Amino acid sequence: MAGMSAVTLSAPPDLAATQPEAELLPILIAPHPTLRAVARPVGPADTDRVRALLPRMFSSMYRAPGIGLAGPQVDVGLRIAVVDLTPGNVRAPIALINPTVVAASTELATREEGCLSLPNQFADVTRPAFVKVRYLDETGAKREIEAEGLLAACLQHEIDHLDGVLFVDHISALKRNIILRKLAKEQRSKGR
Image (cartoon, rainbow, N blue to C red; front, side, top):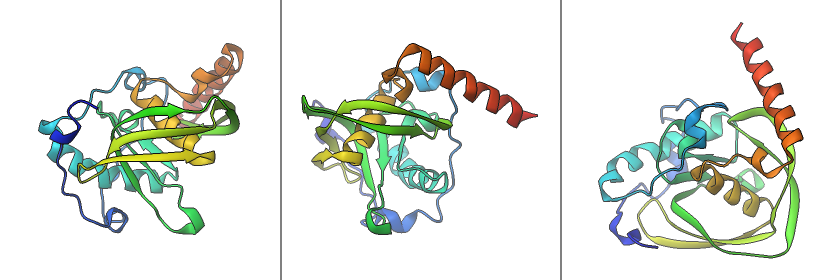
């Protein structure tokens, strides 16, 4: 990936330990236009901003609660995302900078997805069952992760956010419109 080695981030070795103190970020709700914008790659000039954002993104994701959160969801137009499936109730945070899917299986898997930017809305989404994702970690090191099951779906979901795609874009127009109308109605009644 071009420009990957130019980003250096020196984050604390235990990202999860910094989470409780980090200031929360507001999570955007669809149809906010930032959720449909394509995020730009993180470059060397973004190092300090990303270093400050990652703990806040993890804190916001954990508090929501969720298992993934992408930059556009917190009104940041950078290609960054955080993921933590918390296997066995133990935090296992993954910070993804400039992630890209470099391989995907032809075998598909369907699982129910939800999204912090579409609260209380769920739908069955079909995606590749296995993916390999290349990214930079919080220290700027090049990494690859191979995933299947929930982690594969979560990685694809978060990378979609970086491209302005929501999980409802993977379902029929009828189901998508029902979900978006229901969400709008819930948000209106919440604002009263």
